[in-house]
Length: 294
Image 1 (tube, rainbow, N blue to C red):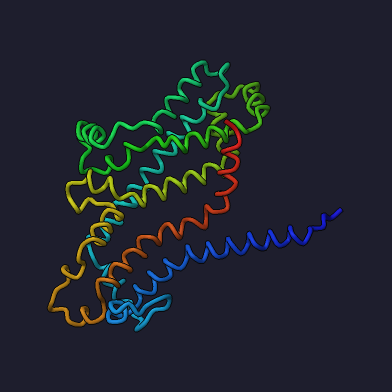
Image 2: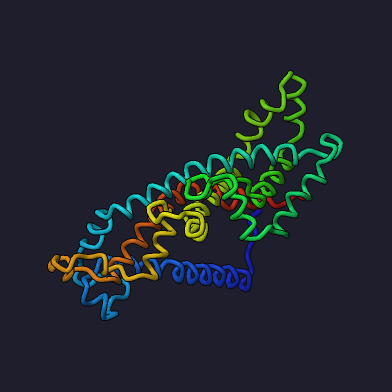
């Protein structure tokens, strides 16, 4: 029998939809504004006339940005960081979450190890000890300084171990009866069933590595080794137009500091915007299922 909604319930649902639509628009409008500025001419962008539609449409800012060796180099560093960081982080997360998802009777010191992981969220060694540790291992100014220190994401580990604990134990027991070991159970049984959680945590890891900028500033001695977010931070607080040749009168008449910064910000956001739709369908399911058990 179909449930008939009351008028107040329907009004509440429409109110929720309205609030979500408004919040979505508020999240999208800044990005649309940045895109509009990046595609506008120098004069209207400098005068602050651009809102959500380009004025004096031009691609010159993007031509200049993608012709800059430093921007391309920084994007390459970020791509390398994401490729290495996400792979290592997800592998370690899976290997840590699997034993921690077992009961105390199966893994004797499971609770003690779990609290060790949780303690790293509550307490940190600090910036200076972390920097000295990285320098001791000769990782300063290398890609490994951006990848290894945060390789084990404790929050991701907790989410995944809770997801593992929610999987049917009967399947695991049947696999052990058939002679499977822990490796087969993990990689052939648990991981395929944990695709929503894995995809969600992979998205978290990708966004975290791509957007991280502070560690690049303090761990990279050479600006040529900056990841893209660190490079953009120096661009935002600096004067981009000082890098242009005064002899290039045509280029100077078509672009400005505002259009160049907007073009670089939007170009840096584009990879995540492209990846997100492919993982979005797993997002809500992965978080909900990974947070219902302790």
